[in-house]
Amino acid sequence: MPKEKPYYLRDPWSILFKDTQIDKTSPWSIDLVYLLTTLLEEMNRVGIDFRIAGTAINSSVLIYQKKAELLLKMEEPPKPPTDKLDVYVPPPLNLPFRFEFTTTSVTDLITALEKALTEERRSLA
Image (cartoon, rainbow, N blue to C red):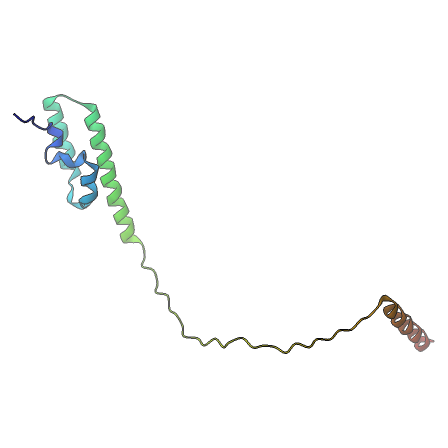
């Protein structure tokens, strides 16, 4: 004779104890108030097993979390569409490059500075 399932693994309470079943079911179709109150009544009738109650509470939390996440997704404002403007970007131009190689030594700079100073003195005098 096959062994009968424990009461908490029978419908409708089985969803509270099987995480895989929670993922496949819409959280809005689960009436947690009904499930938890009837489970507590059955636990009182049979004898309280707190491990079962803890698992049921954990599953209830997961279901409420899924509901909250779905509600928050509904409240998010839609993202504005990104308009791609058709703007013509011309190709880069090759600028002319003038290569001038001038050598200026320190001596040339000192000579030019002395010349500028002497001319300045002459113009002030």
